[in-house]
Length: 293
Figure 1 (cartoon, rainbow, N blue to C red):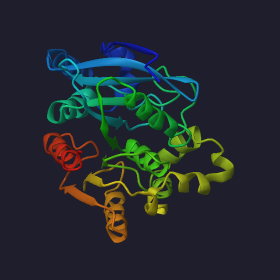
Figure 2 (spheres, one colour):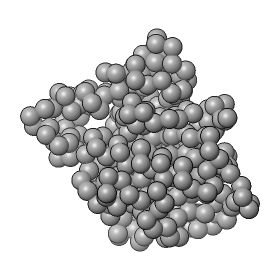
Figure 3 (tube, rainbow, N blue to C red):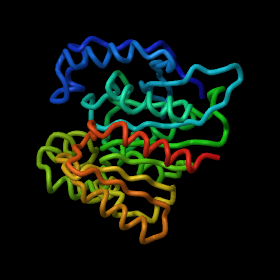
Figure 4 (cartoon, rainbow, N blue to C red):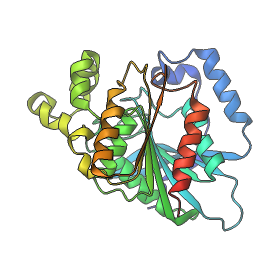
C-alpha cells in the first residue's frame, strides 16, 4: 500500500491554519516555528496522502537523510484535537516529530485522521478513524526504509486515546508512549461540558442514543487488559484539558496487571508540556531505544 501522493511539506500561511492553532499561538509565533523548521537540514518532511478504508487521508512523513539502502525503525505519531483543531502543524513537526527522527534515527508518519485537514470521510473522535492509524502502520511497513522489525507509537491528548484504541485493535508495536492522554472519555464528558457539547456530541456517531457505550469504547481505563504493549505515560499535574488523574489511574491499572509501564509526572506541567519538551523527548527516545530490536 504505497502513498497516494508524496510531496515536499510547505507550511501554509497562518491565515489558512488559524483554526488549528487558535488559542495556542499568534502569527508572529507561527512564523518563528516555520522559520525554524525551514532551517533544519538533517530531516526531510513531506506531505502524504494514503488510503484508509477507501478514503484519501492526509498526513506527514519525516525522515533523516538516508544513506543508500539504509533501514530504520517506524514511528507512528498520533495528533491530538478534533476536527481541524489540532491538525498537523509546524509546531508539532518541530516539537515531536523532528526530535524523534534526530534522536532515534527513525521514520515518523502521522495522520490527520478522516474528515480533517483535507482528508475524506468523517471525523469520529476515536471511532472508525482508528483505522486511519492502523492503516498508516501498514503503509509504513511497505516503505523501502523500514527495517522490518521496529514499530513504535507516540500519541498526545486525543492521540493518546487513539494509541490505546490502536493497541486494543491489535497494533503490533515494540512499545508506545502517551502524553497527556485521554484514558477516561466517560470522565471527560462529565468534567468538561465544552468537550461533551462541541466534540463528543458533534463527532461521535450515534452518540445521542448510545452515549455510554460510545464513551466506554473510548475509555481505556474500562479495558486495561487489552493494553499489553510496554507503555510510557507522561503528564503534567497542572493540565487543565486532560486531568492528571487519567495517567495516574492508567499507571496503577497497568502496573497491577503486570504490563511494562513507566510513568513520569511533571510538576506544574501544562497539557502540551511545552516547557518540558526536551525532557519529554529524551524520555520517549530512551523508552523506544530500550524496546528496540
